[in-house]
Amino acid sequence: MYNQCILNTYKRVDLVAESGSGCWLLDTKGNKYLDMVAGVAVNSLGHCHPAITDTIKKQAEKLLHVSNIYWTKEQGLLAEKLITLSDHKGVFFCNSGSEAVEGALKAARKYGKTRSRVKQKIICFNNSFHGRTMGSLSVTAQKKYQEQFEPLLGDVITCEFNNIESVKNKTLEDVCAIIVEPIQGEGGVLSSTQEFMESLKTLCIENDILLIFDEVQCGIGRLGTFYAYETFRVIPDIVCMAKGLGGGLPLGAFMVSEKADVLTFGDHGSTFGGNPLVSAVGKSVVDIISESLFLIDVKKKGEYLKTQLNQMKKRYSCIKDVRGTGLMLGIELDKGSKDIIEKAFKENLLIIGAGENIIRIVPPLTISYEEIDIFIQKFEKALC
Ligand code: PLP
Image (cartoon, rainbow, N blue to C red; front, side, top):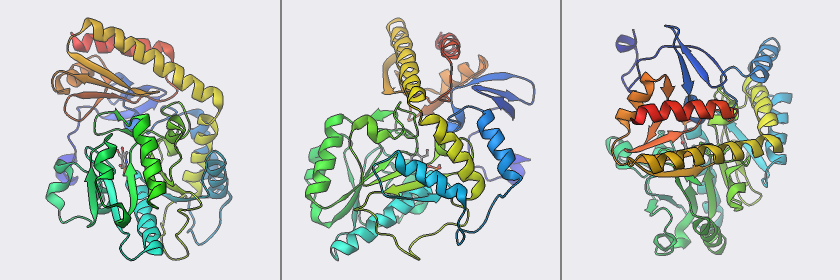
């Protein structure tokens, strides 16, 4: 059915998903898998968390959708919560990470126009991933994603990640924005250095440039702080988010500072963005994740998991590096990750790659210590 009716754009694993609970996913054959993929960092509270399920049930009986030409309490409450937790002024809701990036790029271009006629260039970094729509793809500086779809958006400059000199070398007066992932996800779980983040911020202030953080994968509690920018203590002008925000429903957003608050009536819109159903669920998710004890727990579990993996690294020479923060970890191997991912699958363990030789670990933030231990046992078997 799939082969006949669905475009062949995904390489799928031999699993027909049926149901899920917490960190566990069940297939139609009754197999139970430990899910360390979590819909690629989406199921932030695990599968079928009672708070999400209850909210969906209640909201579904009340109101699913209205046009954004009307107000809803649900969207207002989610916005208020996100803004209260942030250093920002306002938020726009959309449906995905790519759309959040698109909106941020539009705000950046408009900001540039308010400053000077030529201020329209956007800087991104090699190895980045910001999405697959034409705008977000244009700042995704990886040939394999871009090549077949050129020409892309103009006036995009690629600099070297974690190399501030490569940014300083450019003519910055024409630049309206710099977009960066605090931790590159798809690119291989590569973290920005603290120095790089701080230098970017300084450069942006000195050259009247908006700093955009793409927190689509690393935000919403994944690093042990609610926003990823809090981990680096560097406040960007625009924050893009999605994935974990909706806990499994399609919800994206970008949030702007006072300075980046340039979009006005008619500049941007979305049919579904922030409808009452996704907003009600988003609010339930954010209420839980933003609790300080929850975030401390994410940090501690991340450290525990990283320690276990580092111990494993001493025993297995095929592990070259263990990196990442909170519950966004990467295991770099001395070879392609495909074999190990397949062997893990035979152990009923779901893991996913990032780049060629990196295994990415992005479990539900609700994972327990016991489940982390089960992961370690299964992963060790896959390595043998
Ligand atoms: N930005 C980052 C950092 C991502 O990791 C992703 C998806 O993996 C996106 C943007 C695109 O998000 P979406 O697939 O929801 O459009």
